[in-house]
Length: 177
Length: 157
Image (cartoon, rainbow over all chains, first blue to last red; front, side, top):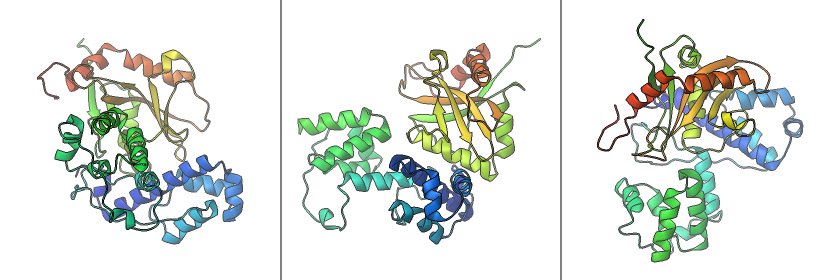
């Protein structure tokens, strides 16, 4: 066992809860809504909101997640994914990454963009691209729409996540293509 | 009297990467982060800390109530770092460093040194001064070199 969420299903569920409430905390901060206003909408005390955000429930009901999301105008999805880590050595992907990736794609409401023929970046020989490709990294799939506006946004998001080096190389590969 | 020997131990059950990792410095009773963490590691508090370490490792921005650096206090504290659990009123302090400037200059490691239990949000420079003391300790430098040898063709221990 290499990651704490692999100990048992309860720990994995706790990881999901911690992810959700981290995202919620981030979005409360970004939206500017005060905890007092949020607590009024939730019809609980501000200290109860703080308590939940600081010490999220270990196995919250789905309804609890919805009750926290809707007053902010947010929705909740459950995402099933394969990250090439069947033994969960690396732990779950942070749920905020899925949300950012969705926004970077232009917030599609249907699957049509995935059925269209999209431009492909000629990144052959780029050492960073090759490293990701050899690892069968999902970022490689993102690169295939790099020349479009949404691709630029994707690179910006990747830059946020990986610290810049990858995005810099990917941009160089894109402009060379 | 034999000289102090410290060890740098990666926090278990956290997904460290080749870009970022979190470690605990051990080898002296004053290094309270390790002893404190050992006590809570398997509790919900410990799991919340592991989650926050995972967030930092995957480049989640610093967040006041979860983890952050100390950039706006004093230049000398710029490498100090803290993981926070507001509910448990517990803070794990340490410092960030780049232990492999030759082989992997971008690799960043947070080394946890001391802990504090406190309710207030005000930064206590005493905690940060303790971090600097441990950071500048020769035994710490030797432990980092032992854990992360930085010569070409030399592998990590």
